[in-house]
Length: 383
Image (cartoon, rainbow, N blue to C red):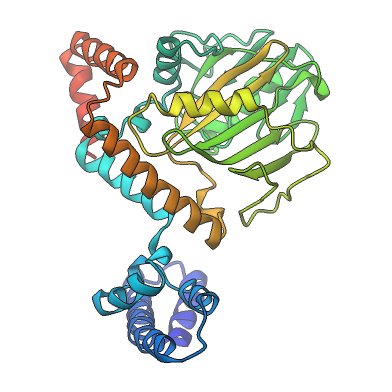
């Protein structure tokens, strides 16, 4: 079945006029055969392992690492909950996929972390809880209309992965953050922005002008990023990112140990820094996450000459698919535990006063919008 599918796939790639139906049919056969084999043989093998003297927990862990929630039917689950404690079903990727589905079906108010992904909303929330953040223009402007000024960063309102981000240090020194290229004129910046639009690297042809945060300790004065994977009051993954003159990064687990934890072409660089995770910044990330009624959010900060600034909130990190299986499972377990803590606090009546005040201000502003605009927003959420 797999060989037939592989032949169909190669033929589909070569032939632009070939219909998708036959390829999908072969794919379904492969998936059905694989899942059935994995469930049935997996159940039989697990039963044999549990009845065999000398089978260790390490043996069970090695075997169960090959399975996920989709592979686990009820008979398999009965055995696994005794010996594996169903650790194998935990996955941060799966949890965030389900949160995304919840947002799409229940609306953005059902997943508060997604509301904060908007730079404007995220910064309004930061103001309410007293966290320092860059000043940003009131409204995004079209690429042909925005004024490119010195001392500003140009950022798409809803971009990702630093695409479309430009730092304007001087008229002849403007950094394209995504490529790490230093552009030598303001005209070159606008041309690069237009190329971003033409090649669909940004979702819309609009940019915000944001206060440029600089750190004189770094090459070119370019700020470094700190990324904290926060699970409702706990931090379990930390990234330290250098954008210039070359992309370098260092990742740590929740205990501060160097740990890439991802299948990435960018290796962890222990020489970039030692174990200097700022304890006060980590504590701040935990504190902020406890103000948000959500089990997970990534909180990013920018280094500067006068401390740290909030960079952004991220509900669904773009590189989550690159986590290795063990890291994904551990963070999935952490997500489950964070959900339990959050639900306990909600049941106990925790007010989440700052977030409620923020959300109320958003509803009030929405009611003040023209009906035409409100209907467009509702249509987007329905999709």
